[in-house]
Length: 233
Image 1 (tube, rainbow, N blue to C red):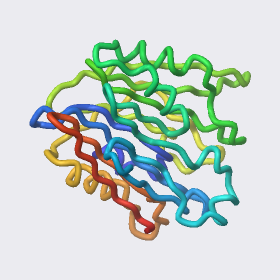
Image 2: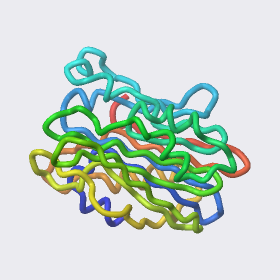
Image 3: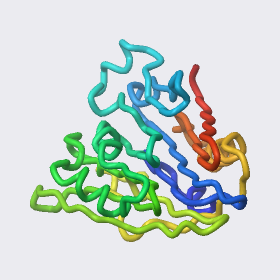
Image 4: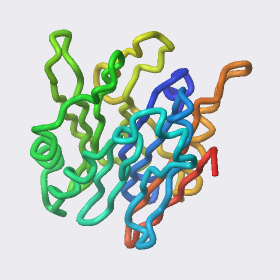
């Protein structure tokens, strides 16, 4: 995760790929600068098929926009749906095991726009794994309209692709992620190890604030295995 270590504040990020042992992998991370963004944790559903963003403190969370802060981050079924917002449900509704992943995302996201959080206008990032994998980002144009980008992700053992909401630079407003998804190595064979490695990669440099909120890793092979790490209980 060398590219992540250079990002002071990536916002939220998604990684899709394949483990060295052939499991399909989806990783998710949340970082936050405001108290409302920090007042969250990831929880695994009772059926072990969802990772949901939940509040740690309702009052603090409501100082922000709960509609943008609370959502299902990952849903597993006939594939994996993952995103940084409530659009995860829309992606999940389009999943089919034999569906072309770019088609899944383009159908699911055709009516979605970037997040209405002026002045940042945070992009919506999404992904899915079916018979293949794909990532998407919906960004604001200078004129205020939405532009949608879709990227295929090759499923090659030990590799993945990463997309984030921001470039990682500490500027105001925060600069949206640009260009193609970044290459990452996926060297871990368990979701516990992958979630821990991602959490450590997001650690601040000495003297800088710690923006980490949570990480999650989903491995799908013969079964579904999920692990989450939360900074705040």
